[in-house]
Length: 418
Image (tube, rainbow, N blue to C red; front, side, top):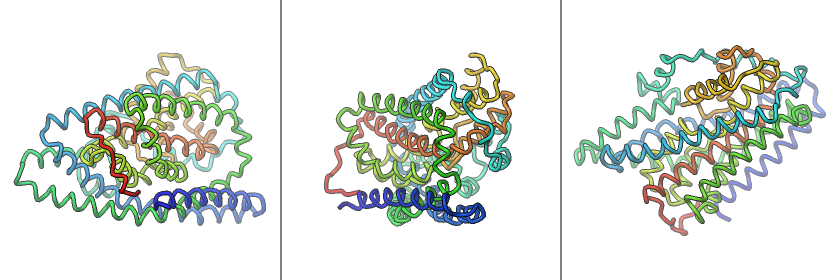
């Protein structure tokens, strides 16, 4: 059995074991025990995520600079970036509009029971929320320090610095080859570390699943059945659109791509973290046949500009909360909300519940009670699993499609194992 297949099997076993242990704890243990158990078992997930986070900054910087340097001149960088942004903007608009359409069609907010709201996590989310302004948006995008951006894993700021550094490196030509060669070696070392870090993935999955099931139990699905059902319809519709467009461009290579990214999809689904699979996804896309210079350029951009699942959920959740409070939002207001979300969502961290911070800020901006986020918190973890997996799918497709458009998508060597 290939190493990647073994890892996927272990992750699936860890998911099943986590659900079983969490359910047993939830049914048989005292509330006091559960309150202590969940944070402790979730430390396994914390360990895994922190191991991944420690390699993201050097990986983004080294691969992106090398990718731009290999692309060559500024004209090529602009052409590839333009194609990527065409995909990103189109996918984001489709995701936002789909969420807005479905939430108006199904009205999931009208069925939310206020008695099941979770107030315990609201203060933490509201505390992270900042009122949107152009100044704060600019500060979030442009770094004042590379070290600070690396320390806080601000991917968008890292991308901005790396683009400038990569373009300058390419402009220097032969005299900068030693820098490109050194960073290329660094990127390969980091990718080697990915294999070691991924061995901890089953433990991270086990901790995340057992913690949430122990706390919430399976009964939460009964209370929020309609909300979840409508959201699943939205996610399924978005997958159908993305895969349909992907098939039109990639044709018979699409099944192979899905096979390659199955393991990253499962990890993202289980841990609810896009960041958790960034290094692994980089590796698998290169094995699929995407050139290193394209992957290194497009994927970091995608993690800042192309979070399709999160985008769809933002309009879906924001308007659902308004529906729960009986607040009517006319079409003009909803379209304004869509534009605001289009801006505020860029560069959100690929970590659990990051999109909820944006939803909270959006609610406050449109006079929807921000504490209404408590209404959807009990079920949000399960929604997060699906929207995170969708983010990974969207970025894998974007990278593969741009590679195909650039004529840089090759047939991989079958002797290379994942």
